[in-house]
Image (cartoon, rainbow, N blue to C red):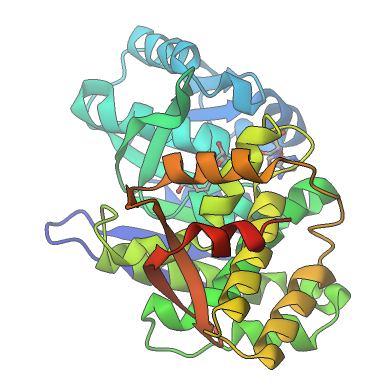
Length: 354
Ligand SMILES: NC(=O)c1ccc[n+]([C@@H]2O[C@H](COP(=O)([O-])OP(=O)(O)OC[C@H]3O[C@@H](n4cnc5c(N)ncnc54)[C@H](O)[C@@H]3O)[C@@H](O)[C@H]2O)c1
Ligand SMILES: [Zn+2]
């Protein structure tokens, strides 16, 4: 069992526990005297009846599966159910899910009765390594993704990699995109331990990486936990987590969030960032080749993107603040280290696009 604590100034520390098979003994992590309300989706409800059965059936809320349901309507559905079931401030919400329900349930927990305890049980690779950690919650609106929400740290994040056994290969890939990102930003995360994630991903076969996924999840969680502890509300350091994302968000918008998952979009984005950094001579040819080798290993960028460069640039300008027509970017500068640049000229950005 591994325990990682994200310290807050007040008593609201966030505890992350990583243990294979943990959920089988979920009761050990819950408080007998507390009422727990479970929020999950239809897919997990069917896949994991033995976990659902651990909760009082009047306190289980099941929402439809899909990013398109991460909206105000589902938020209202959940809060209505909770209020009808007479949730009280001393009760807690448990989110059993990937990032979609996790973000929604987190926002519900942060706002219902002005805040009740939240426990996250992430069930996708992406949620384990990324979305369940760091306190970002919210839902999508017609104006864009995640535009309504809050920062609200889960009291506990319980990570059990046994959930990955039922995850579809395509969903696994989405998580791998973010894992590769952590490898390229490791030194920027200011974690005192040097894990060498990039070399692990570079040297091992994809088969071995899958076998060692517990260790890799643990590394990613440790890195993210450190970054968000140092920067709770995205004032500065957290920006390194957005490596590849300014490009990725443009690709996701242009593809209408279809045909490409977030992790794949991030992989395309990281490739652009590496190309640009090489052109600018921030990195040498050797690191460039190594980086591409790692991204290609996971077959995250196998499709040919056919977006217009002008459209990509326009969207990238919307994504981040633009000064004098210069786009804000996070770029690699040496092995596992990135820096934030606000002075990259548009022609350089254009030249690195697919
Ligand atoms: N809060 C954050 O910091 C943060 C960070 C990154 C992403 N996100 C958000 O996360 C969301 C994406 O999360 P996601 O990729 O986990 O998607 P998701 O929650 O939609 O899960 C993907 C699919 O896998 C299914 N699934 C989940 N666990 C499973 C399991 N163990 N076995 C079989 N199927 C399973 C789900 O039902 C769903 O169909 C996006 O909405 C994104 O905005 C949030
Ligand atoms: Zn991401």
